[in-house]
Image (cartoon, rainbow, N blue to C red):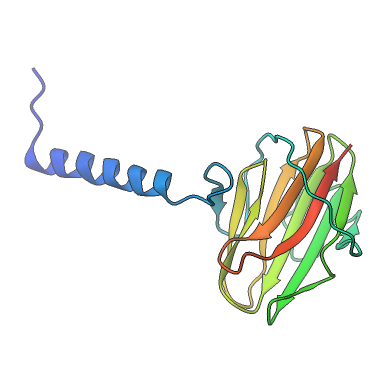
Length: 158
């Protein structure tokens, strides 16, 4: 026979309340993102649609010196200062199967979100936050900030 102590009941209730809060705190446009501190976990994607016209964010084929030791195929770096996105909002194209790292530095605390992949990272003010994932689904995926609701760029996976 299993008897729960008052402490065990409290722990179960606390875990259930935490889970419920996490499920209710979403983007409003997608399912809840996997929010991580400046590191990430790969996941799969589903396409979305939109069409920007500005130049694309910086994408390089080598990882930055401050990034993790994993070699990435595409490094995308964005900076936000006074609600201005640099480089300006545009599209970045990657090939299906590439390992992609998105690094964002914001002058105010915010949260990075990659739609469709349901990935996110906290963006402490002035500190880079990153997500890293395998681009395993084709489509068009919006990358934005939650609090300031800025579209950073659209990721095109072909």
